[in-house]
Length: 322
Image (cartoon, rainbow, N blue to C red; front, side, top):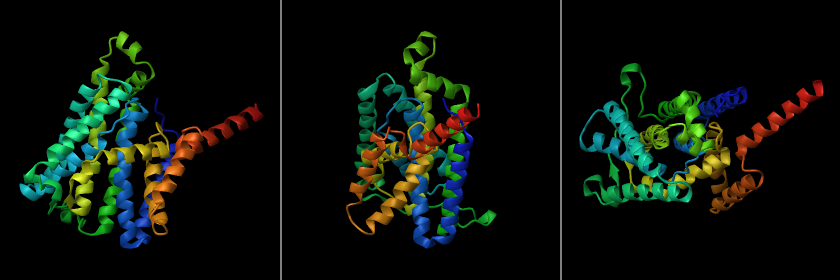
């Protein structure tokens, strides 16, 4: 069950303030790193909702992000629709797609669930890859950004766009926290703990999973729309299963089932990758070693291990004072 502890809140505030400070001091390339980290963090957050709290390991969230990105691109670049309207429709589309995938895949469990979501992700990839109207394997350019000139925000500049990504990351975390603290969130945790018992109590388990998957699709959709606006270009690479794998790696690296852990993992991955890749092309090796060490250390992840150490210290201190 999810609890928004003081430690989670402090960590979240530090991360968001740190990203904001880097936008101010890191220059253009620093802002690009912040945007990349925020988009990956939102995707990882969506994965943690279903994997960490619902027990559903998904390999289609990259396709959900890509589908939202393509929907936004098609509406703005091909149809000429306003970016604000396209933003909403693209997120709704990814939510409905995720709900449908969750409804079907929820009939399976374990490795079969993983393979079912992977199959759906590949189906979406092939459909878009083979669509000449969407640019095929060449992708699609001319994606427009939101126009907030009326309120004095110019999204064509990197700094306002980076701050918008930080704000949406905070919003995504808040929505996820509210959902997990609700009655539905507790039911989702119950499904993960003992699916058969919940089913015996009359709970429609498949519908709980489908709704949770739909909610995670909403978060992935926000990430997808921002990814499309970031480069103002979309390509089938956004839908590859490897992006889903990267998001899952980030969740495990940061801390599965902690909600704030995926943010830690995404920020660490993006910035460490940047530092290591400037020295060697074999940065994947270092990330792989870090992931192996994380799993061997108990699988708690960076934030999860930190939370574990702090909690043990508090209990030991309380026991000494008792």
